[in-house]
Length: 124
Image (cartoon, rainbow, N blue to C red; front, side, top):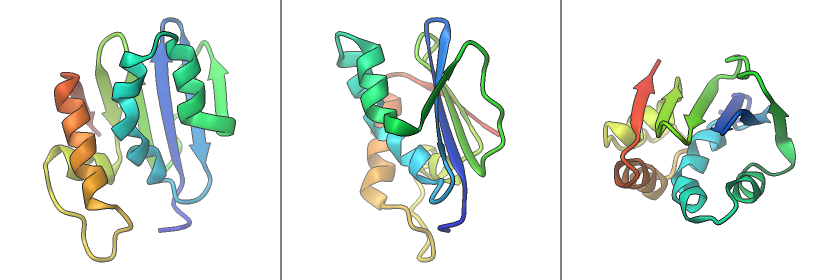
């Protein structure tokens, strides 16, 4: 699973903030458990930058869906669109398989955050 790529894109107002992971791409899905911090922040842009770190790319256009695990979050619409198996397992409240690097408490927290924030999740 180390060679799996990932991306996390967060739309805030008119900008898309995107982080790409060339390795361990499932980490992009694990970051969803911190979405609630964005809604509590006084300056969402600052929290987005802290969440995504130095791998962040900003643009006015939505990013390409080219990673093995891609996640797109629209903060205003409370919408998450993804092809991530980790998010799929979290939403369906399934346990990770023995060969998967996912941490079960992270899956539960992701589900809890998405549920508490009343997110719509679209799995691709």
